[in-house]
Structures are given as structure tokens and as C-alpha cells.
Image (cartoon, rainbow, N blue to C red; front, side, top):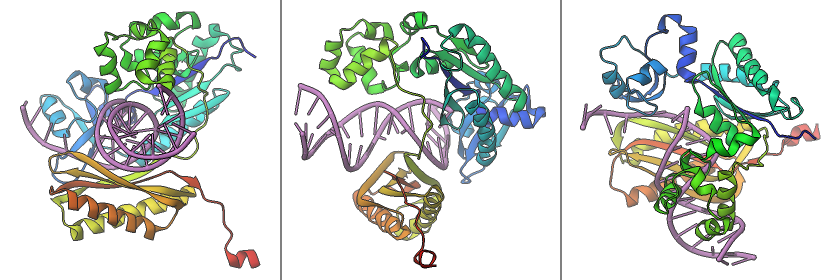
Length: 365
DNA sequence: GTATGCTTTCGGC
DNA sequence: TTACGGCCGAAAGCATAC
């Protein structure tokens, strides 16, 4: 058994926009903004990713495209629609490279992954820099993209390390340096600490991870319960034993769409919902899974987001059950709300694998 | 008092 | 100030179970 675990976090830099730069060299040196266009008006939509040149002008993920256009009105900026199929192909190529770089591999999202290289490096952190450079060089040579890499004794610290220097960063946090690395950072950088928890901590004068680490574990347990209290205490002290593990089934699948015009009429919403349900049933068949929870997501004219969901008694694959559930949820929702909807979505979750079934005829045959 | 499960909301990219 | 996608997993809030 190696003396240390060595965990790598790889994060592709401004992924969508970087792919566009790679495939269209004439964009390089210009601000590049990739976004989702809803089709309502020419500019209606939101920014997915922007390159660092665009970010210098204040462009951010999630920003309305019209804002980004205004921020870049005096620049020769490039605005592009997302091409998810294309990005997924590149992502698969990169993930195949990364999978071969370590003993264990875990893809977190389209542009992020963890590697466990403990065995490969025999626990020797002295070889971490060479390995990190090697990973970056492989992706650079085979795909042409840059990434930011963090290497540390666990997933928690590796991810924070990768995020601390970007783009094109390589940050190594040795086991002895973990505590000093974490201490000055705000508590919100820890996994599991969101806005609410951060508020509770700040109210008690606990602003940095160091403040949290110095807190007696019993006191944290008193505030958050034993499980969370222990967990926060461990995280703040740089302790994380979670394993790098290839992910299985997705936890949820959803489809959401912006309506051509706002409405709260069932007969105007229904054709759209049927399309969303069709897409989802197709997806679950390709995954070979059944769902037990069905939900709808409604975004009203004033952009407020609401959702409703229900649990079925058992996991199913039927489109008819999905449609019936969605109909019931939407009717209930509409009876409670008077606002028109701008966007509407369907979400399914609580999956279980469907046993591969042989049809009766093939069984008999 | 804590764990678990269900539902809704949040937040990252 | 402007005005706005489509996903996903995690966080949060609550009720009930242990």
C-alpha cells in the first residue's frame, strides 16, 4: 500500500469557447462568447461560457446574451450558439485520455474529472508535477486544449487546488501543506457549504476554513448535527476519504424549453410537454433505466422558478405513466398559480436499471 | 436528538 | 441599468421514523 493517496482533478479551461477557438483560429485574440439562444428574439438567451478575453469585459456564465453584447459593443467579439453534440465528442476523447492516465477514474461533468494515481506513483508526490505536466501535454497534443490541474492527497483538496490557478494551471498541494493551503480560503469553498450554511457560520464569526478548523468538533455537531458537524470538521482540516469511482447511472434526467410565447393554458402547453416526455422516454430506453419520481419545472413570466414532483409506487418506463403524471402535476400547479409560464420542463429521477428482458416470442423461440 | 426520505430550491457551467 | 438557457447535482426545508 502506497504511503499517500495521490488524487488529480482536471478541469478544462473555458471549455465550450476554447473548442470554438481551436476549430476556428480566426477567433483567437478576440472575445468569444458561447450561449444558448431561445429563439424568441434574435438575442434572447444566456451565456454558457466565455473566453478569458470576454471575461475581462465582465462577461460571465449565466448572463443574458444581450448584456454580454452590450459589454462587448466596442469590441470585435464573436457570439456563437452552443453545439453540445460537438462538445460531447471532444469531451469523450479527453475522458478516454484521462481514463488511461490513472488507476481509477471519475468523470464529474462534461469538462471535469478525478484520477487516483496513488498506485501509479507508488504514493510518491515528488512525481506529481511530472504526471500533471504529462496529462496537460497529452490533452494539448491529442486534442489541442488547455486545462487546469490540481494534485493533492484527496478529492476535496485536489478540486480546490485546480480551481486556485487557471487557466492552464498546475497546482500541487503536498500532504504537509494541505492545512496551510486551506486555512485562508472562505468556508464556502468547501463542498457541502452553500449560501445558507455559510450564513450560519459567518454569523458565528467563522469566515475562513481555518476558523472552522479551529472550532471544536462537538460545537459543530451541536449546530449541524453529528453527521454534518463531523463532516465539516474533517473537511476544514483537509480530511476526505471519499474514493475516486467511475459513475454509474445519472441521478436525474430533464428536458426544459422556452415557450414561443408566455401562456398558462393547458391546451397550449400540452404539445410541448408531449415532446419533452417523448425525448425523456427515448433517453431512458437508451440508458436501460426506469424512473420512480416525475417532476415539472415551471418558469413564470417574471422568471421565478417553481417545481412540483411526485413519487410513483414503483419504477416504470411507460410513456403513458409519464404523461399522466405530468398532466396531474401541471393541473395541480396551474390551479395554485395565476401566472403565465415562460419556460416549462419535465424531470425524472430515482432510477433503477431495467433487467434486460427477452420478449416472449424470442424466449419461446 | 439524530437519521432518513420526500419535495422544492439553489447554484455551477 | 440592461433582461434571461438548459441542463445537472447539491443544498435546504420539512415530516416522519428510529
